[in-house]
Image (cartoon, rainbow, N blue to C red; front, side, top):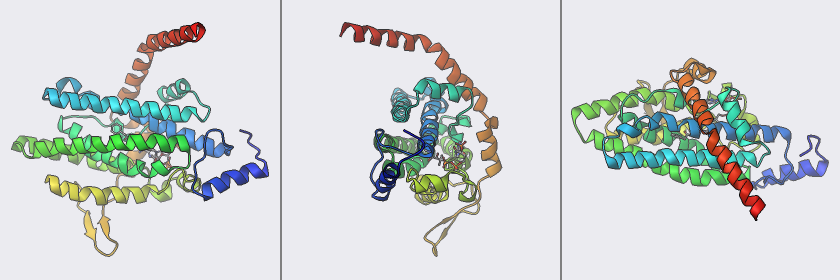
Length: 313
Ligand code: FAQ
C-alpha cells in the first residue's frame, strides 16, 4: 500500500491493466487509483441508497397490490446495490460508516437525478424506464472495470437494473394503453425526467476533469458523452414504441454518423444540482441523516450480537 512504488510494483500494476486483467484488493495500486475508486464507488453506493427515496414516496399509494409489491421489490433491490457497493469500497481500506458520515455531512456526492421530485405515479414508470435505463448504459461497461470487486458487484447490479428498466417500461405501456388522462400523466412525467436523465452521465467530456485518468486506469471504459449518445440512441425507438414524445426539438436521426443528434442539456442546472441547490437536495440528505440516526440502535444490536457469537465460538 506504499505511495512510493518499487519498479516491479508499478510494472506489475501497469501490466495487469495492459492485459485487461483485474486489480484485486491484495495487489499494489497507486494512491490516486485507490482514491479515484473510493470516490466513484462511494458516490455510486450513496446514489443507490438515496435513490430509494424518490420512488419510495409512492409505496403507500401505489394503485394496486401488484404494483405495490413490484415497487417494494425494486426499492429493496436498490438497498442491496448500495450494500454490494459499500462492500466493494471497503476492500479499498475505507469504512462504510465513514462513507455514510461523509455523505450526510455533504463531503461526498450522489447522483444529481435523485434531487428531483416524484410528482405523479407515472414517475415510478419513468424512473424505471429512463433512470434505470441510463444507469444500465453507464454500468454495463463498468462490469469490465479494472478493479475486481467493483466489476463483480456491477454484474449482479446490472442484471437487476435491467429488470427494473423493463418494469418501468411495462408500467408506462400499461398507462399509455389506458385513458387520455393516464397518457397525459406519462407525457408530463417524461417531459420532466428526460433532461435530468441525460445529465446523469456527467458533464460534457471537455468539462469532465476525471475522465481521462479514469479511462487510462480502465476504471471507466467510455467517456460521459459516448455513454450519453448510446443512451439517446437506445431510448428514442423505445419512446416511439410507447407513443411519447421526447422534449427536444433538436432530436433527429443523423444517417451520416448513424446516431441521433440531440440538444444541449442545461449544464448550469447540473452544476447547481451537484452543488446542493436542486429541488430536493436538502430533503434527501436530511431524510438520509434521520434514517441513519434512527437506525443507530439496530447497528448497536447487530454489533452486540456479532460480539456475543464471536466469544461463544
Ligand atoms: N451527479 O469528471 P467527472 C442509479 C461529479 S445509480 C452528481 O465526469 P467522473 C441506480 C463527479 O462525481 C446512479 N455528481 O466525474 C438507480 C465529479 O465530482 P468529484 C449513479 C456528478 O466520476 C436507479 C464531477 O462531477 N451511478 O441510478 C454527476 O469521471 C433508479 C466531475 O465529473 C454511478 O454513480 C452527476 N450526474 O464521471 C437507483 C455510476 N456527474 O467527485 C435508484 C458510476 C458528474 O470530482 C433508482 N459513476 N458528477 O468531486 C460514474 O460512472 C462516474 O462517476 C460519472 C461521473 C459518470 C457519474
